[in-house]
Amino acid sequence: SSSSSALNLRRPTMKATLPSSLAAIAFLQGALLSTNAFQSPANQSLQRINPSKSASSLAATHQNNRHRGAFAATFKTTSALQSSTTSNDDPYASPELDTGALTKYAIAAITELSLFGATFQLLDLAAAQLDTQIPFPAVAFLFYAASLKSRTFNPLNNQRPDRSKAVEGEGSNGFRDRVMPSWTPPGVIFPIMWVLIIGPIRAYSAALVVTTTGSFFSLPIMAFILHLTIGDVWNTINNTEKRYGAAVIGVLCVVLSAANAAYQYSTVDPMAGQLLGGTCLWLVTAAALITDTWRLNPTESGERVPLYPVKGEAETYFMWGSKEEDE
Image (cartoon, rainbow, N blue to C red; front, side, top):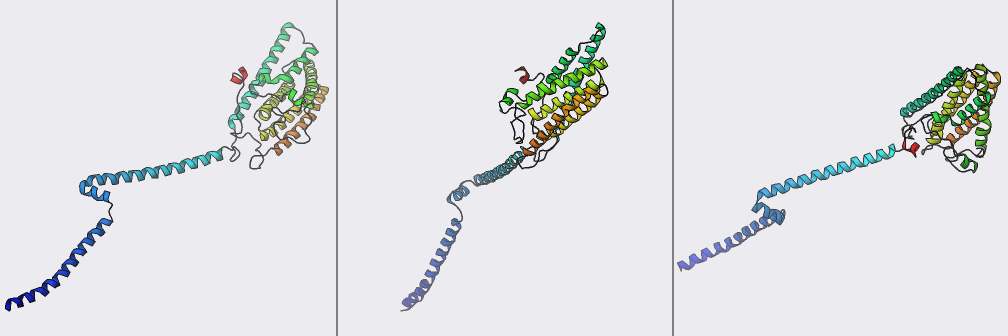
């Protein structure tokens, strides 16, 4: 009976201990599962097998993130440069004076004046050596050719509008290649004025001055050559480069130089001064036409083109020795 009592006393103890042991085992298993849930199987195996590989993997991930950041920064920089380049494509967005073009205009003008001056001095020297005076018709023909082809002594590309296209009403450099006023004269008027009226008046008035002074190289004649030179440079600005704003100032200089030459002529021969002064009427009309054309051809933003050569709106180059001249 005593042994059975002992057995009875031990059984409750074992019954009470068994549930506690099972609860502890279940708690440990749950903790282990919850820890493994925060790690991927790949990471777990890497950590078990080779911890150094895990460190290199983290370094590679960090390096990739750096590359992605650098790519993003480069993309932003490229986008900014592209947007700034687009804004810089418009030379009138922030207009700058084209000093290079002004320098070339000055060099071309000095070259033309110098070549004409040297030619006139040679003519005077030849006449003195031969002790003769060049006939009036020959002098007139010389200045008629000079008034039509003075650009021969100018290194810039200062071509005139195509006369045949102008007569037919078609566009060419400087005529109908831009928006022009409704009151623009028909194309046939221009060759008539320059070839049949302005040219002969210039030739005859210059011959009067040379005959009176007995010299080609004189202040009145060089004032006339200055007028032709400014006109040649203006043709480059207006016809070839299409600088609508600078062309307005240029044509005003053409008018003023013609008035100055007419005044210089009048000091030698009043009739010569009056004849050359009469050509200013046509030049004033041309100046009004150029000014109105400038008004009708604004920039893309609707503003007026600046009245000076703007950097980037055209390229100024010398024709002498260029490929275009060879062709």
